[in-house]
Length: 238
Image 1 (spheres, rainbow, N blue to C red):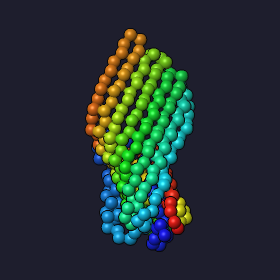
Image 2: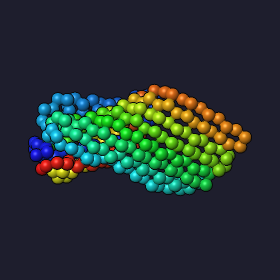
Image 3: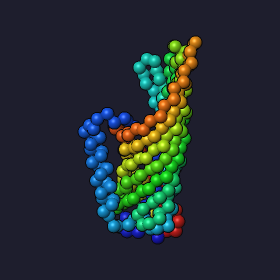
Image 4: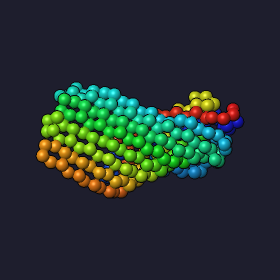
């Protein structure tokens, strides 16, 4: 058996700057702390050592704003991952990241591409009736290539950014059958990032370049983007 225990099966597994610890942020930090405490305290294993877990997260949005000028927006994020159960209920693995954002209207356009990858550690806690609680830590690297241009001022900007990050987040998974899990998570609930960037601005008669380096502590405090849907498939013998 790859997985054991009641309701058994198990899968695997992708900011707003902190300005004040508002009530929403405090609730999430408390939830995250409770998640870690429960996971650390549990001794009920759900995944047998040696299981391989294939999965990931997918996010796609396509929408149009009707305020003048009409703006068309497109956003996609792909996060495939592969994990290895090195110990009952504990998974270590790697993931890849790709994202693209586009926004266009009669005044100009804005777009960016993101590429990256990293390592993760995840631990599960059984809740019963096919539900599981998990906590995950990620260490990763991303490269972003972004550009924007205004048809009104004929000004533009190109930006390249490299980021190394450490992130933590909780989530919940549901076992559809003995191979497939669906999950809901608060991606990058808390993250610590080190980044370097080069920004080049241009327009009629001018050109400038700015280089920056910084360390940032972030939290995903936007209610509209806090949740991510993913899936996991257990590979190996039944």
